[in-house]
Image (cartoon, rainbow, N blue to C red; front, side, top):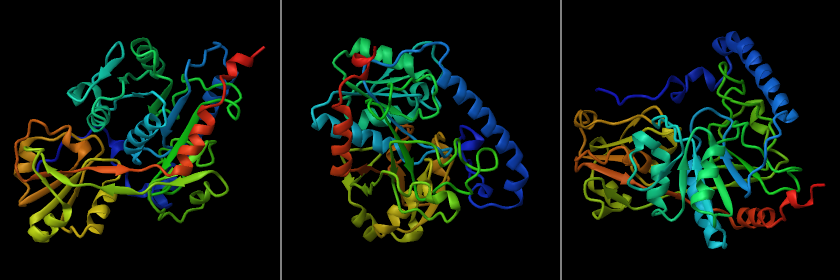
Length: 363
């Protein structure tokens, strides 16, 4: 079966990242060096020789310390929708992973080409029906400037990823400021707890954060799995919605009907996301068992790939669907997934965002 093109090796996590063993121990010196370089860059950043300025509005960063996806995009969507209901006017920025490099930031809409702006920004635009301004560029500060220039009414910005983006300067005295850093953690936890390349971590599990968002019960048993204990944390439960046919989106079918209609050996689930197993597990909870094909995050699809799948029903995620708009295969059904933020999380966000601009009191 010809597999879709993968964006990079790191999007398909090697097995030795999950448990400590000979390979990870051999690579540990490189991880130590990686950590030293990061600490040096952090020190340079903290000294702020360039006297960089904070942004005009508070920033909510939704990121992860583990390489690959941990379910950030559904959280960004849920945050934007909840903040809007609370009276805020959010805007969204993203690096646009896999996007074609552009000199200047690009505004994203539901009809944008994922190859140009990335699959996740297009998914956000589609799910939110273009209700929020979304801008894409590797330099997030440039995206913020373009966004606020086009939409000056925006009073809070959500950054899809960006914890490691050092040019994004935080508000002063962050406990009294209005920036929020959220670390998203899924059921894989921190793997073997090592930094790259011996393990999956971009930063130590002990990094500071305002809160941890857990998108599933952790199955990790390594010592780093306890990093969130004693810290602010919220658990978010995913919910699969009614599936719709890729070729005819108005044609909907519940997962219960799919489970009753097709035998397990006639169903294939495909996912090119950070944690495909999470999608497959959610389907199993809905009574859908079948063949599962997990691909590298951000992989692209071709009609030839689906034609080689011998199934009567193919289930994909919405993130995959934005890359399959030109594929006319009536066997493909898209399964939407949504998250609802706990009221405790929304109330906590409100309490921070309502704080006054700390720059007003700087002498």
